[in-house]
Amino acid sequence: MSFASDYLAETARVITSFDEAAIAGLVTLIEDAWRAGRRIFLCGNGGSASLATHLACDLNKNCAHPGRPRMKLIALTDNVPTITAYANDVSYAEVFREQLENLFEAGDLVIGISGSGNSENVVRTLAWAREQGGRTAGILAMGGGRCAPLCDVAVIAPTDDMQHAEDAHAVLGHLLMKVFSRKVAGDDVG
Image 1: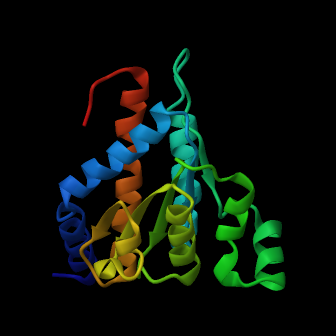
Image 2 (image 1 turned 180 degrees about the horizontal axis):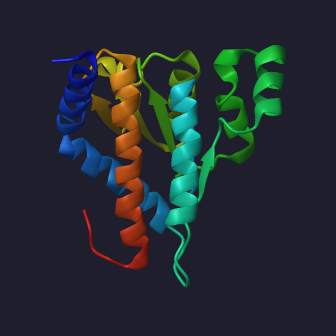
């Protein structure tokens, strides 16, 4: 086999090894937040920050149907001036949690995305959201790290390789968009 074949085979293994019960749990958390008109906040670093933005875009735009309630997703990764101000003046570990202080209400959902599951700013944000009466979820890998126990639901890509984790997380994001596009349209999908 070539390197490319090996890489693709391992990525396929990771994707097909997701815990489907965990995915169903994440769908339920997101659906509950949407139906209750709650906000859903996403955060992560690096590739996970990109996925937070991508997922917010996909669910906000592609799940908008005439006459149906819209999803309310906010990627805490998108306001670069605010992130750099908090990083400079407070701590990089607080860049997401500090933003929630202005926006969060009890019952909102926070989804932390972290390949290692140990990103300090994601850990602190999930912990704070739980303390404030929020729901929490993780899109994680590498066993879930410190984030997993802070989540009502953790979907963990079964790999210790960051690129395979990010590949699997991107597929999960597209799966969520497909599920919610149909749910918001009124179709009964799981």
